[in-house]
Structure formats: structure tokens, C-alpha cells
Image (cartoon, rainbow, N blue to C red):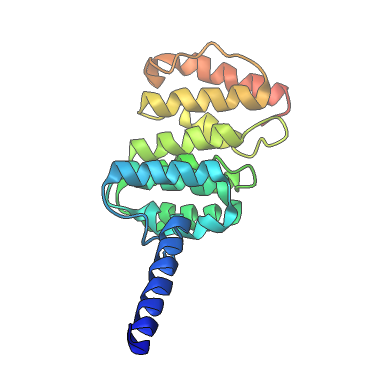
Length: 212
């Protein structure tokens, strides 16, 4: 075999080995390896989340704006688990700038997965967003963040007892109960107009307990 041919074959072997390691490690310079069929992307996101390597968080950030709702939601949830700082920044940006209400709703809920998130961000979304699914996502995320030690969302929950959407009202009363440790006779399936007295009693009891 000619020396030139040996050198050529050696170079090809090295390149093929490097390419194999590249794909085995799945690093691909960012999110390049996370492309293709949405179901496969979701499965890979799940694997990344289980692996628990914070270094993978950067691969998830672009996927939070993916056209497929399942992919975007899976990326948001995984990001919240892997990197709290990146999650707050990315999800906060989606809450502010994303036009799709379904993605904003998912971002609001995922924002509540991170214990260090700011409850006031979700409280503002809960009381101000025009889309009911987004308000419901914010109420759910805020309820997850709320406790007797973190009562900041309580005024927003109380206001949301009069929300037009029953899902919003359901998470609002759950958030109130998580903060106060008390159950209240309020049915989120019924209209707020039919529960004026119950809402008044909730406010009175919260004031008496020192929460309002």
C-alpha cells in the first residue's frame, strides 16, 4: 500500500472515530441533536432531565419556543428542574413576549416548578393576563410556590376567586388553602356571583388570621 494511501486511511479512521464520539455524547454544539420527530425530541428531553446534568440546560432553552406544544412544554419543565437561573430568565421572557397563550400558560406553570422563582411575577400574570388558560397556568404555578412561609400570592388568589374561568378559581382557592392551612366553603364550579357571601367570609377569616 502506498504511503499516501496509508495516511489517507488513517485520517479517515480518526475522523470517523471523532464523529462517533460526537454523536454518542449527544453534544452537537447545542440543540442540533434535538431535532426531528416531536415524540423523539420529547423522549430525549426526558432522558436529559433524568440525567440531571445542569450543563444540558443550554440545549433546552431554544426548545422552549418549539412549534410543537408538547416539545415546548417538556423543555420548559426540564429546564426548571435542571437550572433554576436559566428557567427564571427563559420562562420570564416567554411570559412577557410569547404570543401563543398555550405556551404562555405552560411557561407560567413551569415557572412555579422552581422554588426560587418570584411569586409576584405569577401574581401579575394571574390578575392581568387576558387569556384564561394563561391565568390558570399562573394560578397553578403560584399555588405550587405558595405556603405559610411564602404568602405573597394571597391577594392575587383572593381576587381570582371572582375570575370567570373555573380552573382559575379552583387553583386560586387551593392557593389560599396552602397559605392559610384552612379549608373554605367555596365551590369553584359555581359562578362567583352566586358565592358573594362565601368570598366575603374568606376575606374576613383571612384578615382575622392576619393574612390580609
